[in-house]
Length: 544
Ligand code: F6P
Image (cartoon, rainbow, N blue to C red):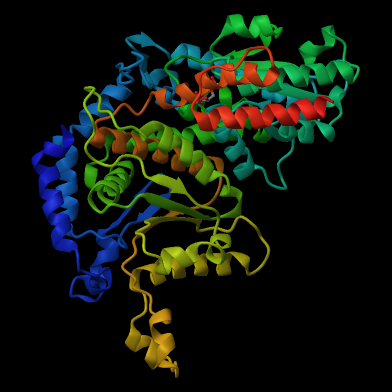
């Protein structure tokens, strides 16, 4: 059990010794000038400055010892070896194979997967080229102008985020739209501006049974028919991404227009698979391959770099340090890069669905906090909203600042201001401002002084991408996946299942029947029963 490991115990004691210390003193001490160099690591065009963390050399040494005692490297090797690391579902978690080359020789549960991956990539390439060139047409022979990806969770967040990040003014190809919510306003708003004859729907669902996706796909199909697309013509407007061939056929999509993937690909790790079809259509297959290449480079780094230079290892250890030893309940992700605005939402699913668990691999209770709440928005916007709390609030909130060294936009002056603010926030969180400094700045009203004091000592990482392009984004996302894996390995939980989403889904079905009036009242707690009655009353009134 992780928490009984000697290094875990030692870290607990060590955390106590750090209380009352201030990072500012470390920077101002004799070894301060070396701190940035010591606590910086680079890989795959990414630079991680983790000097502004509440860590000393001793903390790091203890964390690396913990990684050794928790056998993180062995668990990583088991994942890379295609072993059933998803123990409750007896599946491999081999998303790394999706961005590998066939000669890398990955196997899932002993079965080689390289040839299947290459076949589907070739299928994606052909299709993306055909849609983008206009060779794939709608039912009346016109080229596709709009693509709607219907999916949710892992079948939505990754592709939506990458398309947002990498689509710029130079991007040619159809307009991309994403519909996830079963709230009909999502689909209605999207379809309202579209011409059915030039619109293509990608129904994206690993299981092809997910309520939201199937409801939206059925409604979209009706809309195409109402708009004059013929039943036979629907084949030009619907393709599927799934592992469930039978369900795809039953829905009415020709399996020839289905892009398969496999049970060893978890939903939140799937954007590299056919789930990324929308990405390939949006940015072109060549750039999609560059995204995979960046991720592959990070995979190789994770697999081979020593812990002291291993980015996923360092970040995963820091996450556990803050969550389990310093009691931080959340982590803010602040991309100072507007095209990365959807990254926090993607990371929410990645980390919280993976590691939001309280049961260890062996079935015992985890007696340490797991998955922090991941949240955030782009900088500088967040500075004018919730950064107040991070500077002067009562909670410890580690921050990940993410920025690009080269500007994304060529509007003069903007990138300089953006970077200056990014760096200034990290500096302010670290150093704070003392009462004496406030007075020295000339504040005349002594009553104001306590309000102007910043405690500082608030930790952050700064992650710099050379530039925002497919390669560096791929590396960043693979880094995030492996960081999540390291967290889970340290907590000794299964990061690859998600039983916690099942109960609510199960309870929704009978409530839906009650709301529809096709079933009588089932047994509910008083609160839920009252909510159902209230909704029924409004629906009855509306029905007249
Ligand atoms: O309900 C959670 C979940 O199972 C996620 O793990 C998954 O990414 C999402 O639903 C969508 O599932 P599917 O791709 O099977 O529609």
